[in-house]
Image 1: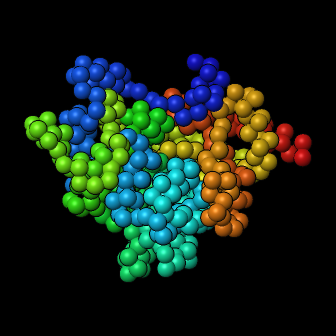
Image 2 (image 1 turned 90 degrees about the vertical axis):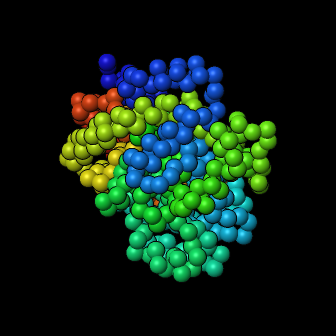
Image 3 (image 1 turned 90 degrees about the horizontal axis):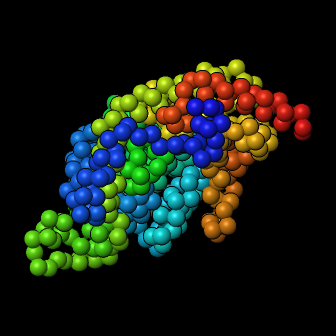
Length: 379
């Protein structure tokens, strides 16, 4: 395969399939039941076992997971949620969908993750939750401020869209017991369901609430509904359940996750070695020893010129993410965040997916070096 074919924008973070996904989808299709079925529930059980947690609640997307987690926590109008501006807009939309207010904070320039210090500095009397984003797959350790947050009744809900399989200390992300954790299983994630998400709830009642919210407020399970003449709608809910078709894909991906974990770590380390000699390039640290990397992001000078050069030469670079506090939709909650604003002008996401080889990485690094030379000359 030529470099342009595998490095172009359409495959910047291309899903990697192991082969059996097609047959798994066909089995789900042939079952004649495409909604939430036993296939979905088996996927939930398998994820819970993999992470070492009591329960897991599968939903339609990572955004749905965040929305349900916030609703289940009682977050609503008048409440404030501390969140980094450096995240995908879905994180913020989930907060505003609850009627709550995002309170934007800075990130550490080296990791693009929040710190406990910055979280506590941002707390106000209206703060009800903190929503750390596990950028690039790196765990966010807020254990040092857990007591301070608990004393104020502030909950932690993790946006772990990038971080399935990563470790926080000696446990997988989601298994610490200190936070509700939300995963995304979208097309370009470490584990894909095609589309999907999942919540790791904290306790039996939280799991029941999440399950009711994901299916229009109905409290009975699919099996219970099929064996009865009625069902109970106990309160507000949304159609957020994960289909059996998506769960079938996810089950195959989970069975092969050790391969993804190893390949992604190896690829990220290859980038680290290839980029080390390049002046002006700073690799955002994902703590690869403990993480399953989801992205490979660098900070570079003359970012826009470098971006254009690489695109023109067939390398599908991207930007993750334009800061949200500068977006028109969220202008009413703007706060000056100079570090984030500077980072937003520097970050560049390099192609990162399991189709790539170390030879591709060397090619990208070589073109990036040329791009920097050209960009500097054209200042």
